[in-house]
Figure 1 (cartoon, rainbow, N blue to C red):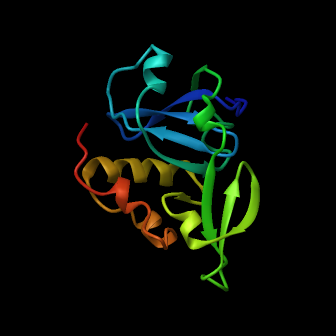
Figure 2: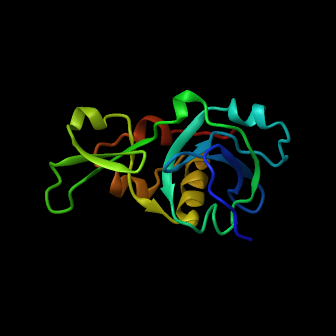
Length: 161
């Protein structure tokens, strides 16, 4: 079932056969909430009050093609209206870029500190990252892409919420 990727849309993301979490469509990516649950949460305000685990740019198979069903829409809060990601030039890894709301610019390494790494993720890789997070293990996709190691601040450790 096709869906529109509207900023503020809240989607249910299946982590595995037992647990799910929720995600929020941003202006150029998707934010994933730190919530592993078996129970459907019906209060959208409760969902958006959860901490955000990470953000990522996801291909059309996640939201648009309906793998992650939209359960409601709440306009984005001001702090979520400017999503940023970083990457490096493939041939020149010392050159950093920031992707900000769909636009690219050259950046310093310091400007990239704390940002999620850019890359267009397939839903299966996002679901694997969520599984790894809740099992307390390092995700190999993120480790390979995040040359600054920003993921270590949030993705490592045992998180059995």
